[in-house]
Image 1: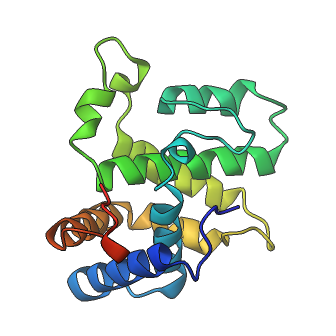
Image 2: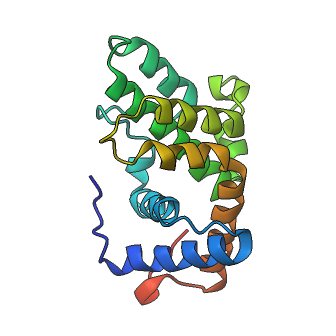
Length: 178
C-alpha cells in the first residue's frame, strides 16, 4: 500500500517527469508501465520503503532478499515469492536507474552483492514475478514482463527522470528531491 496517494502533488510531478522522459526520449508509452514507474519513484521517496520486503523484513542487499525468497517459507507460497522477486526487481531498477553512483558505495568490499549483476538480477526477478502472477495479480503479469524485457530502457529512462528533476532545481512546491 502506497503512503502517498495518486492525487498528491509529488505523485503527479513524478508522473509528468516519467511521461516526458519515457514517451519523448525512449518511445515507451504503455500507460500501465509508466504508472508502475511513477508509483515506484513515489513509493521510494520514503527511503525505508526501498529496503522493505512485503513480509515487513528490512534488507539492504539483493543477496539477502534472494535468501529470504529461498529460506523464508515454503516454496509453494507463490504469492510471497512473487512479491519478493517483484521487490528485488524494483530495488535493482531504482538503484541502477536513479542512483547508479551509489552502487559503488553499496558494493562494500566483501559484501555478497559484489557478486550480483543488478541488471541481470532485475530482469530475472521481474520475469520470475511475471511467471508467478495469477489473473488477478497487481500489477498484472504483462507489466512485470515488460519491465523485464525493457529493463535497460527503464534504467535509462529513470536516469532521464533524475536529470529532469535535478535541472528543475526543486520538486513540486519547492520540495528538494534527491
